[in-house]
Image (cartoon, rainbow, N blue to C red):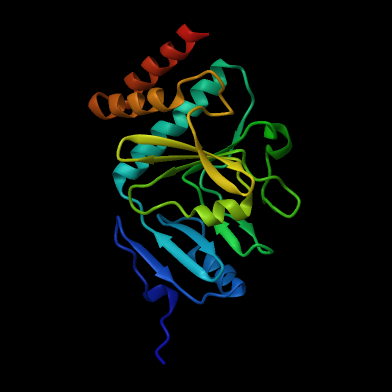
Length: 213
């Protein structure tokens, strides 16, 4: 049987590679070989490793939505700590994922400045953001990690799911931002950022938030 080395695998921009029958120890070795300075994202669930190379449009949408969250939290004077695309792992559940972005809000102070996150003792982020442009979100990985709220942006639309009784359920309103029409506001902001530029769109979004306070 032929065996490929990791260095032989190239993931073209906008494409996904799925590798099956990967043990946890093999997964850990692959993570080390891939390193931190890379343009790919990974997800792992019960022996299946997925490697994704995002497209530029994916990165633009990711940045826009993360900025929406930051503006909201800033203007609401709520503390937060973002860990971007950190690798979150749970060996006991055989799950791992790298979100497009993520936020600790309730645990912002507890998690601030951490060099390593260990989900056997540390809480998962309260909010994760995924752009479903290059590939679809690995929901089972997020379930295994216990992320409370998941935002998925796909084809110009934002979907908000919350963890309820061991599964993700779509909700109309974000529990993290009760009373705010998050879906409509985020969709509008991303569209404006595409039509003009990110600074102008962000300024408009901030003005909208302040006017509602």
